[in-house]
Length: 284
Image (cartoon, rainbow, N blue to C red):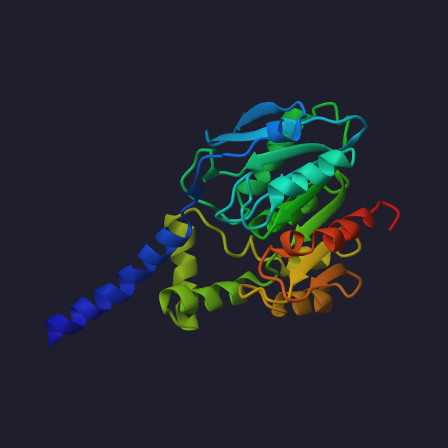
């Protein structure tokens, strides 16, 4: 009996390590569609991060000074099968924007093994932008989906004034609530395991759950030119995170899409989505 309980305790202690390992892995996939199908010139670009990860992407130039960096979410890539990010890039390009499309670390054709929920990703992208636009010739917008949206918020916090606008499509606001929810749904771990999971993630997997929480960040960024987009049928976020944002920043600009799942608003309602984007300007 003692051996049984010892084995049970060992399983309970080790299973969370497996859970963190599994859910911090990235998702590599070949990039099949390219801007060549739009009939425009584009450039294959790459960037080596401070910790030696090689990132890959595209630069699609246009006339004028407006430029947008598009960031996919966890499990995505430049081709953006869930969010439609590739087709959104085409819309931006047709409307006079230069476009930078990147595979974040551990995704698409970029290197790396693990995601860090924006912790390293926002530093990667800020470094890459400094390389791409060293003379600051462009007026930049960052438009991200899910983890990419959180990365965009972190970038705006780190370099205030660098971006003319931020579009955050389906960002989590309260990471602790999200993590507890997903631990139960995906791993059958009750909320009381969160502290242990957080400790494992920090000490063995290079994560920082406090940093990637957005509650204080959204309060700090309140009043900046940020458009938040949420979807009513989002089983990951639901209406909870939108409501938390409203309490933290009552003046936050938000768009709510009914009958739409996580990061699927553009694909489901392209006309309304792009109309909302056209309404974002520095003067608002």
